[in-house]
Length: 136
Image (cartoon, rainbow, N blue to C red; front, side, top):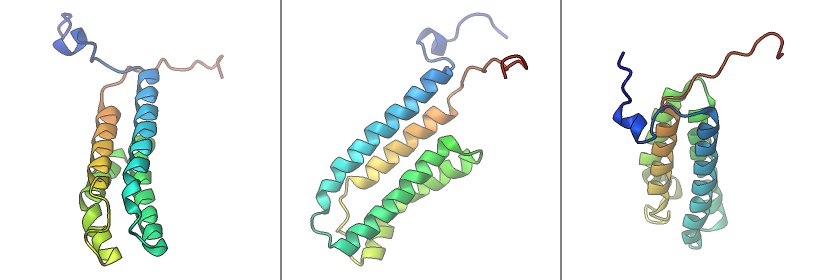
């Protein structure tokens, strides 16, 4: 193995520390949660039942995105979250019986949030030092 720093390390894009990993996930989740709230301002035309269905489906998508970084089945959840985000407008059009009721900015919001979470989750991380018996 070469001892010369790679281009990625020179750019500061080497392995993430645990703190950097947590900061990335917290930042992404706060940011995209706020963006999703902003995007939902286009839902005035939905009646209460339609809005409830939209919220239920969005909550499922958000939970799936969060599971990418919280589950031991992260690859499965990554694929599932991508498929959910890609199909979201079509599923909602079917469920609400109207293809144009869901704001068009929801899908790109879910897609970018999913892809960014996947990038952070699968980025190389520094190994944590093993806890000794005395520390426990």
